[in-house]
Image (cartoon, rainbow, N blue to C red):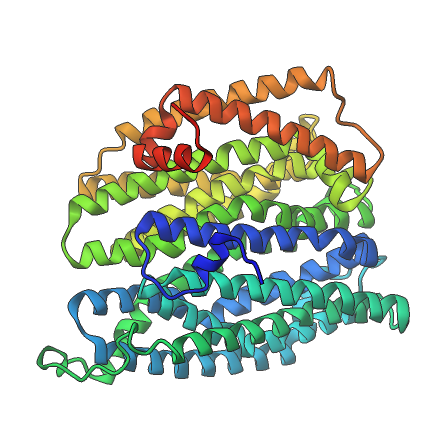
Length: 558
């Protein structure tokens, strides 16, 4: 059977450098997120907007409890394994993995039980006394349906963290693809059979769909177990205890693991609180305060939390790939006291993130109508909400990278300070900005999006300032590249605007919409790449070796 070269590369256990790891992880996550977006087309057609809102309720609650169940252990595992490897503590590293699995399994069972018991109360917190759409019973059912996933996903994630700590990014990347592929197939087939064949109703169809998270995670976990078992030598799993490891008791390992994981769990939960603030306040404010209908308010919420969020995940996948590679590499450099390399990796990660995410977010905003039409069909509110909410992912990814840097460098007070600052801004400004935007002639829900952007942006800037002072980091080159990136994005925007005069984007066919997206993506990407190549931005960020490799592969003479 034939596989593309990058798939073959990911199928083998091999340590990767920071840029290689970031590339592999990003490719895998992009594929995973594209699958996660593409399945939405048939899934949306099957369950509709009300079903999408119901799916979003269950998934947002699940993500919060998954963060609690995982207690930040997968990322803490990656960081600690990386440090122990640098120090040669191979025996302690394996004990760390076993202890981590015990802790995370216990937390998964606890979270599962809490979701089963308190599902109705959580549903009431979301909906209150609002009637006319999904009911408290509906939301309770889908929350309980997805709760089983928490028994598997945390342990699976911990195994990924273990491999990532060894800088074996390829098997973890393949596991993500396997998980998403199985999950997507189960969601589409399961929801279709439940609703259209067995006529079980919308609630049961969504319940079957959210159960797909369990099935996908289980298959992925089996793959990881096989990889770990068959690569003992590469992972140094048979090493004996050394003299320097005698003082590393189980108590010390547990303390280190929990200490590192505390900030990771706060990071995950805090990011989901942004969505939860909207989930709890947006619908009620739109309906009770601004006289929006329940259907419109739920459609807006579904766009922000589910349908638009899934499109945003394509952009967010860039930061996820960077994080997977950044944590073990940054932790290794810090453990080896190579501060110069720490500074280089921080600037490199920021530049790579901005180079990729800014034009993607702007492009999706400019093409909001055909993108929405292609994936979800005709909708008035979908493109209106998405064209602005897409920018939250730009600032969310920046926030995630900055917080990850602080965490990897053991700057926990800075992490907590930045997190709390962002949440305070979001919670404080959300409702006032909803009313303010409505009063000045914009849709009120733009205020909620603006509150999210401000929370992420301000906390990110503060974090970068603190990092710069702590490690004497000079951001001058990154700022220069940012200016070049912004200019290239502006030129790309103007070119797309000019082409809109020739090729209109308002079409009423999904097939035509896909064609429009393809044409404008080629135009936009070509313009952006050409400008950044001419002003040497590409050279500075990716390096001349990467550029030479690309030209060699394409057999282009410079």
